[in-house]
Image 1 (cartoon, rainbow over the protein chains, first blue to last red):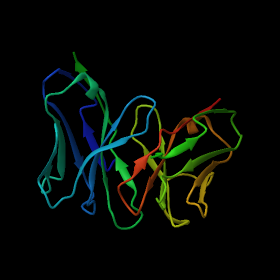
Image 2: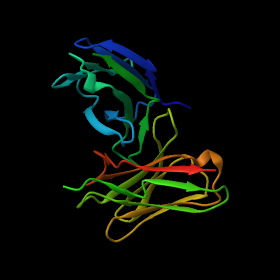
Image 3: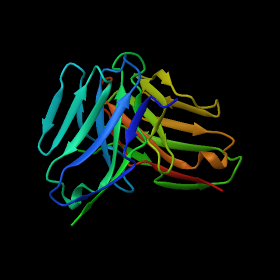
Length: 113
Length: 111
């Protein structure tokens, strides 16, 4: 049972373009939605996170859009740069209980120079 | 500031053997979680410990066990290794529940 579905599996974007990654979740008990960035040979690093009481959160070039009724959220990377080339994971968790993070399958993003 | 440190970084084991992976959390962090990341997939939750008590366990067989020590460091043990246990094992720590910082992981290869 995949509780967090992520698309696309891979994405190629021109330098300066907008990268968009989408996720959908099933469990309405989730109350914390982080995005992680992972480079080869490294662990995932928290990029940006949102709680369901807000519809959008922006940090620099990274924006999360959140649609609670549709149970969907997305990551937008503005002015994409070659250094953004990495694997991105959306995730969800409940901050009550065992606090486990449920990850999507990941999106391999490649920014063309 | 030291991040989450894991040892060893790489490990090769034979089927049927036992392995112990170690994790040192960020100083002051009391919560430690373990995740398994198979190549090409997202990490999957194995265990969570807070203040030395097990707070959560993922859908993994009893061959997997863990513990947290008084200094909040942690060990993940896997018995009777299978080829399918080959993966990147990630440790993450947090001051309290949530906001986890991940280490770079231990790459385990079972042959």
